[in-house]
Amino acid sequence: MGIVQVVTLCTFLFGACAPAPSQLNWTHDIKPLIVEHCGECHGRGKLSVDLPNIPQLAGLMVQEVEAGRMPPWVPTRESREMVGRREFPAAALGTLKKWLQDPIIEGEEVAAVPRPKVDFGREPDAVLALAGDGYISSSARSDELRCFLLPQILGPTYIYGYEWIISRPSVAHHLVVGVLSAADVARAQALDDADPGMGWDCNAATLPFKGSLINTTVGPDSAYDYPEGAGVEVPVGGALVLEVHALPLALRTPAQFGVKLWLRADAHAVTALAFNVPSEVSCPGGVSSDPANRCSREWALAQAVDADARGNNDRILADCGQDLTSRFLGIAFDTSSPASWRVSSHCERKIVGSCSIFSIHPHLHVRAREVRIEACPAVGACELLYATDNWRWLWESSYTYATPLHVDATWTFRMFATWDNGMLAQPNAQTGESGHDGPALPPLALPSYHITDTARDAEMFSVTFECLPN
Ligand code: HEC
Image 1 (cartoon, rainbow, N blue to C red):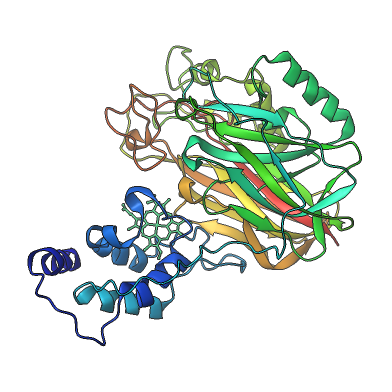
Image 2 (cartoon, helix red, strand yellow):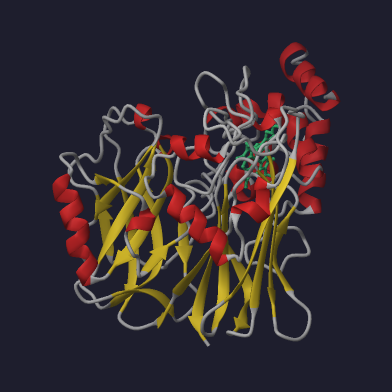
């Protein structure tokens, strides 16, 4: 706070705070550091860490960096070493603090520093986007999942790099691209033909993707380069489906979505191993058996948009050797609702076959708080693949390991999470908005039972590993 005051007073009230010539300046000393370490996420809007915003943000910037919250690095330091670790070096923090102690000096403008970005070294081989000006939503819902069959590329080929196309980043929550086999292209085409609008209402889980481009969070992961010699296979006659998790209210004018692809004729095919973990989240007071009560499973299923919710959910429980009775139904129901209340879920699974894991993408929703994912050999110590005690849905990303981990069918994966279903974790009672950008605004709804499902606001815990043949 002190820093904010000093900066503000000097800059705006006492223009006489004349800089000494040797002092650090924004353009030469500070901006490159901010662009390199913060720029990928803080380019625009009220959190733009650009000079006009610095007097307001300065104190908070230092505080967030010193607290280890910014740049956000979800996995704990103990997790297996990853590439592109987001860290603000101690020397950079020293420079930032020193610059902030003195009156702010802008310095002369130099050429813009580009944001960090994957450099594929050449133009893309294919640019696949929606027809015309793109998609306009007419959905009355507050969000929707829409699928689009992209123009076909000639297989067999391997995608070794990609970059998302999104004309207005604020209109979508995330994008996914899945690769379909020739047979499934016909099924997707039929779904598209049956829906009068552009694309069709979908859920990626209903189409059996042979492979997918999984760095799906729009924001930090705008592009991805697979490890040397690896690629996602597009078979003969295959095609790509783009799934957009769209925000309809922002899509009353068209937006363009798609993907740029870098292709090679031959590669080691990347496989994606996906695991789901039961993430039924009961209420602080236990589980009601009254279908009209928000703390009953019946109520939660009645809210689900996906007709298969019950089946999906029970299958996930069974895959992890669990059932509802053993998880929740024995708990006596009462009506207490503390501000914060933790419940955990876990799953242990063997993998089929053998491969080398080079990346991990945990996906959990807003109630998730802690995550821990381990891979354990039959004999010996487990590898901590990913852990955080501070899950932030907004920071979700795929992470690439510095060295791949060889696993085979003797290995077991252990996945664990805790969730907060207390009063303060609830969505706004009127809009249903669950506070994706921070806590939801009051008045908050009463706690409700949450299930693994595709329904809005339902909880989700899935982990996708990308693997290469051993
Ligand atoms: C990977 C994306 C990403 C990077 C890199 C990043 N931030 Fe952030 N930052 C966010 C997001 C998302 C939020 C808002 C939500 C949150 O608090 O997590 C945020 C919030 C903030 C806030 C506001 C915190 C508050 O309590 O309101 C500050 C200040 C901030 N970031 C500073 C920085 C600085 C300084 C850097 C570079 C050293 C940086 N960030 C790098 C994503 C990022």
